[in-house]
Every structure is written in C-alpha cells, then in structure tokens.
Image (cartoon, rainbow, N blue to C red):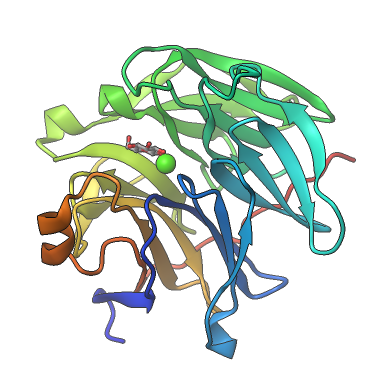
Length: 296
Ligand code: BGC
Ligand code: CA
C-alpha cells in the first residue's frame, strides 16, 4: 500500500464505527459500532475476519485493560474480560432507568490508566453532556455543558488534554497535570470555522511528533494539526463520515480509520461504498503506544 492512499482494511456495514484502539502487546486492533452495540477484535497479521462481541446496548468507546477491555456504554462503564462475565465499574449518571438519556461517547485512558470518557446529548443538540474521569473507582464530571464529547487525546509530553464539543466545531486544549489528573483553563486550539474546514471534529489520535490527527465527520477528511494547532496535512477519505483514527500495525505507521453510514441514505451508500468499513492508510508519521486502563 503506497503511503497516503486509503483502502478498505475490513469490509463492514457499520452504522457508527468508532473508537479504534491498538494494543501493542497483543498486536490487536479493537473498535466499536456504537449504534449496534458491537465491539470488534482483529489481528491484521493473521488476516481473516474480526471477532465481534454483542453488548446489547450502545457502546461509545473501548480502552485496553489488563484482562481484556473496558467499554463505556449507554448505561455505564464495564470491564470486559477476555474470558468471564462483564463487571460493572460505574453507572452512567446521565442514563435513565427507562433506557433513555445521554449515552457515553468518545474516550481513552491517560498515561496513568485513568479512563476519560464523555457523554453525548441524546438529541445531539443541547449542552447537557459532560466529560468524566474514572479514577480508582470514582467517576467524576470534569467538563460540563457539552453537547457531543469527542476528540479526547493527550500530548506526548502529557502537558495537554485535547477535547472537542463537536457541536461547537472547535477543539480546545487544557493544561493537564498527569499526577493529580487536574485540568487548567481551556483555550480554543483549532477552530474549523476560522480555518474554513468542513464538517465537525470527531475522534482523534496524536502521533510521536505531537501532531493531532482529527477525523472531520461530515467533512470527508482527516486533518493533521501541528502542536500549534495549524493544519499541516489533509487526507480525503472515500466517504463523508470518518469518525476516529488510531495508529497501529507492527511499526505503528498504519492509520486505521473508522467510518459511519448513519447519516447516509440509499443513494449516499451507493455513492460511498466504503462507508461503514474499517479503512487504513500507511503514514510517514509514527503513532504512540496507547496506555491501558489501570486502577492500582
Ligand atoms: C457521535 C455521533 C455524532 C458524531 C459527529 C460521534 O462521536 O457518536 O453520534 O454524529 O460524533 O458529531
Ligand atoms: Ca466520536
């Protein structure tokens, strides 16, 4: 595969593919189809089809855990061991018993193993959601007044936490203290409006040079932003709704891209046959190993 060209890695018909995460130790890629409540597991070197777990509820994101995975779902945060029963680590405070409310959405672990995961307003329109942190069994809101929590990532020196409320079309960065897990005052770091970029900022990954690769949902592209927040490269994706990216493969130079079909009608699906699949692109840049969940 030539560098920079995008192709299908795994052909799928996902509604809302999301949260790709690569385990270096297991040489395995995990990701979710949020709307269908599916979690996928795939070892590219082995070829073959991915394995699929059905959670029976929407699943916003997954992270690596020593025993398997953790998942932030509609109802809460679950540990999903490779063998054995799921274990509930926290309830989602925005999820009503009646099965309605704000589900969990994008998230990832920081370098000490805390899980940061945000929620999404049920109607994707008002600022009723929040960004939470699960730290040694306690789930606390860290940012409130959010519409769609997305794009969570950390700079390689761990001094910045990146986050977007997709509804605002802006990516903010917050001074981050890894030891205490506290955030300073946020500042606008990227403004798609000002830059004339299309779509909304969705999920992201940071590379070893500290550049932030953002999937522009409804913008049909992945944009690489420098640590100063300047767009330095753009990669068009063969569908309008890329959702998130993750570096993986033995050399951490394959960018995996999840995609969605949820906003495409029959005509759109026919026009963009690769929508709903897991895509891949070889890159010049190298990714960072993703830290796992750790509550020690
Ligand atoms: C959400 C979707 C939303 C998209 C774009 C995703 O993280 O899960 O529901 O449409 O972001 O904002
Ligand atoms: Ca997302």
